[in-house]
Length: 206
Image (tube, rainbow, N blue to C red; front, side, top):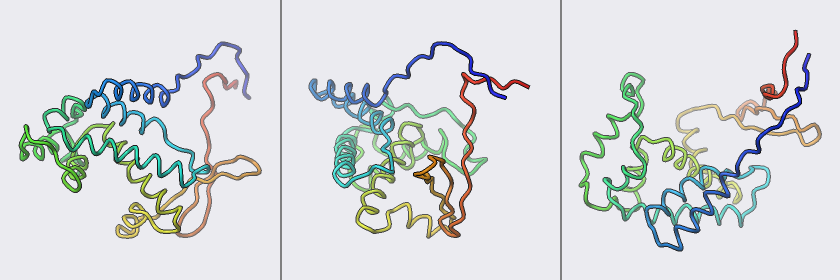
């Protein structure tokens, strides 16, 4: 049985709006490094509602991401590490994934005082980097590219990667009548309801 406990709840700050405001201030001051940081933070905090996507908003988001990429390619690896410190996790080799050591090994092969470069050079750098903000930013890049392609009725880069690796894709869908969210198996079409955790202001009484 659930019992509602009365109490005040603090309203969560709108991080998307805060980072967008910080981005605008950085642009006015022409502070390249702060533009990059606030731009990455804004993209990560402003994930769009997949049920309400339209071509104009997706194109605008992709153009925003491209503007951040255009600035990133002009800074050096040394500057980049100051903006986004490497995450200090050291057991990646044990699990076959990236970590501090693998990122440093890759970065050590680059000229620390030479701009990262654009195109594939920037993508490779971001891919090998080990920082949660950058990891999320990469996910948003792929997700936005997928959205652009899906609106054109085509497969996106993530779809192609899933097909190449033979991974079963799952999608979160919502029943418009009940509002219930569920997982959809992209191969079989089978669904499973998503159970949400009990809010902190509700207490289970035994």
